[in-house]
Structure formats: structure tokens, C-alpha cells
Image 1 (cartoon, helix red, strand yellow):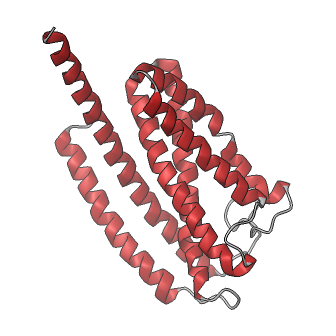
Image 2 (cartoon, helix red, strand yellow):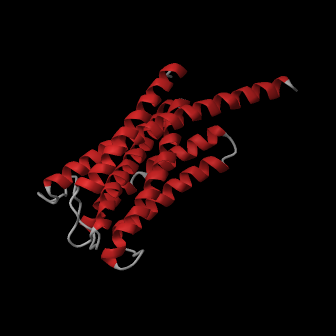
Amino acid sequence: MLGNGVRQNITGYLVVLSGLFMLADLYLIFVVAPTDAVLGHVQRVFYFHVPIAIMSFLAFFLVFLASIAYVVRRDGKWDRLAHSCAEVGVVFVTVALLTGIIWGRPLWNTWWTWEPRLTTTLILWLIYVSYLMIRSYASNQQQAARYSAVVGIVGFVDVPIVYYSVVWWRSIHPSPVVGPFAQANALEPIMLWILLFSMVTFLILFTYLVVERTALRNSEDRLLGIRLVARRAGR
């Protein structure tokens, strides 16, 4: 576990770095990026929507790995990491849903449609909200860790389903622009570079949030331990 001084230095650097990258990213998105001929300025939401969605996938992948590590080793640090990544992932997938709705409204002429990508993403959101609810309503920490680890492992199955949904089923959602199913030259070079820069920007922000939330979770566990010791001493 990192010392408080080292962690504060890391988080400080991450805050400054994410702030600088975010300012540069906003400039690239709203000043440099070309305006789409069909969607107009609303297409700029794309530079937020895609990286945020990918960061949610990364968060749930880390939940998946940390949950397996916890089941195998029963080490609380993996449970704390899984919990922290799940909370950050729910925030990102929520924003991904909202930005997707804003992006799709002019194109589909509706705020919501039950097409495969939106539906599977909503299911993903429900899975990890239920993950957090299980943790909140469990009778003790050990039970919360065990039950949520199962959800974290099984629930990850929906992540590749979300990505492949536009390939497996007929969908009005745009085809992938990054990844193995992305078409060659799907984006203009300048748009692709801005998208990649935006991904790096949100990766830095994601890293900061996970580091900060994990540190907070460690503090919560230490405080709980102190309370248990004080309660036993008072008997």
C-alpha cells in the first residue's frame, strides 16, 4: 500500500495532468475538430461519448480481474480495488448513456430506442448498480465481498456483448470507429487523432478517480477497524 505522502503526490500530479489535458481536449474538440455536415455541432459529443464508454469498459474489466483475485486469494485489497472501479465505472457508463442519448437525438429523432447497443448498455448499467446495491445491503463486509465478486465476474460477460451488439444484430447505432470491427478510414485523420487524444485525457481522469476512491476505501476500512476495536473494548 502506498504511503500517504506518495499517494498525495501521485494524485496531485494526476489532477494537474488531467486538468491540462482536459483543457487541451476541449480546445481540440470545439475549435480544431471539423463540424459534421449532417449532425452539425452536436457531433462533437462523439469525442466525449466514445472515450467515456471505453473507460467504463476498462473499469468493469478491472472489477472482473480484481474479483477473480479476491476469490482466489481472499485479500481485502482486491475487494477494495474492485469496489472502487465499480463505482467509477457506474459513473462513466451513466455519462456514456446520457451523451449517447444527446448524440443520437438529432439522428434518430427520439431520445430513446430499444436498439441492441442502447439496450445492452442499459443492462450493463443495471448489473453494476446491482453490484453496488449488493455491497450496501449485505450484512457484513465478508458477505458483501463474496457476493459482489460473483456479480463482478459474471457481469463482465455483458461488456463484449455491448461492443459486438452492432455486429451481431441489426442496429441503427453507428458502426465501431475503433477496435477490431472498425472500418478502415472510418474517421478523417484529424478526427481520429482528436478522438485518441480524448481517450488519453479520460484515461488520466479515470486513473485519478480510481486511485482517489481506493485510498478513500482504505481509510473507510481502517476507520471501521478502529470502531470495532473500540466497541469490543467498551464491553
